[in-house]
Image: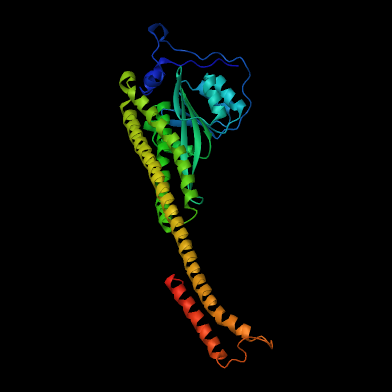
Length: 385
């Protein structure tokens, strides 16, 4: 196994000064070209990768097919930079990268497990960044989140993607079309990745705004399914906040080191622009959460009002039914009196009072009339009729 290449001091002078912001300044006694420890184990197995490329002065000079070829060619390019992209890599692939580039075990463990919050950590001369990308899916009208881990070293950039977003192939293509930016080194690649992640938030914000507008219409239209949609969108906004809020602090931490480390002026402008976009996006997401909370309150109020209206309508219908029942009962009682008298005198008994009385019929008719009139007056006074 050949010895690993040394990092000449001329390479550090030729790269962007932003590298000094990522690499702590060593004591004077340690300022000398360093060499990676000689590798004694066998070369890693042939591994599948999304894309790997070697660059020199901002121009691609090689496209290795495997990690082993990438390691070998990087050692043969004293002033080169490797950009390795992996998607959901295996443990063996990550361990081979850790052994080759001296990655810190904690950062490798985070990259293996995923489900990390956005953060920025420095491990010696390597910067480890965790980002949460997002994309808006039109068909289901929901936000899909991905996770991206980025290792930035003196002469390498490693991206470990968990999820569909972001599209790093577009980032690589854009950087290769601007070699004057790519020649600034791994820090410029980190900027491009940050910019791509933040730009990916723009269509998400637009899609969520459209969803909120639709939800407001559904709320006042009385759609019964709107509460579920509000809840689901609120959950997505919580996840969106977890992706954007830490990113604001991460970028401000990088910006705070501009003066101390003498960061390249061009990269300073780029990072400030990204920080402005992140801050704007974070504020919009906060506004979305507040709007959804208010919409949910309004929806609950409207639902309560609708339920009260329905209960009032039921009560009014019950009252009207009771009034009708009272009227029917009153008339039934009035008609019952003559029916009772007529039924009694309709009996076929031979010995009954008043059967032979000449005034029996008028008496019976008068009795029926008196009883009916009396009942009518009583029910009328009680508002039954």
